[in-house]
Image 1 (cartoon, rainbow, N blue to C red):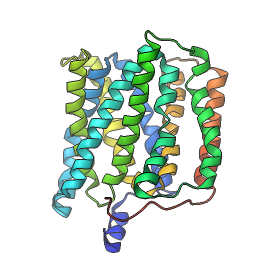
Image 2 (cartoon, rainbow, N blue to C red):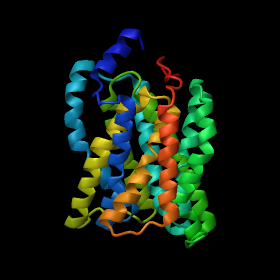
Image 3 (tube, helix red, strand yellow):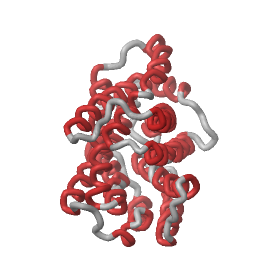
Length: 312
């Protein structure tokens, strides 16, 4: 990508007060609505994964049309990033939901959110992006916050099959981290909407196949379930993840990963307000640690800017 292309892409990025950091934070909080909608829908893993993506596709296609007319078709490599990212996203959704029943929500949530470590490591290993010492110093506090927020100490080794659940949760974490990494790389050369739509299309097909293989896909959910899944599609598929696709390439990887921890914090608060859930004192303490660590990591210094060269 040339310097002119970089300037052009930044001019087309929606601007929020606070810049990309604010955009990523808003995206993370928007994503927090989706778990509540899925819970209210009563849909199983495959059904929820398929329809939260499928129902987002018509709106995304409408958003792609002006970009395609302006930019033309995206590079083949970028589409490959999108399609591969969609498969990983589907794997994350299916594996994590499976792990919840096998090992408990607490441990599965903790394991999936090790993306805060894995994404910066991937950026360092592949793109040679520097990880600031400030992030490394605050990382243990972030991890403790995630553990407490997940309610791990309250649940212990609950679940029907802790060994299988741990494996599925770790695989979900790897899938989630790979998805976030490819989502970042797919936004470096423009065509963000087109690439992201490829992500959602790929995730729809992969979720349907995986849900069918696991016997967790109902092609004809109830109208009530579809209504809640449509709201999940709006908040996550159309708004939340598209904003992440737009803003995360313009942030250092560690900053984007930390800001995404606002999603479980928001989901915990929203679950208490909407679903009548009662988080423990330890969970609220974990949320506080995440928020304090995120503030210290994101606002104190700018860190290393993300690489602007063409990903290899």
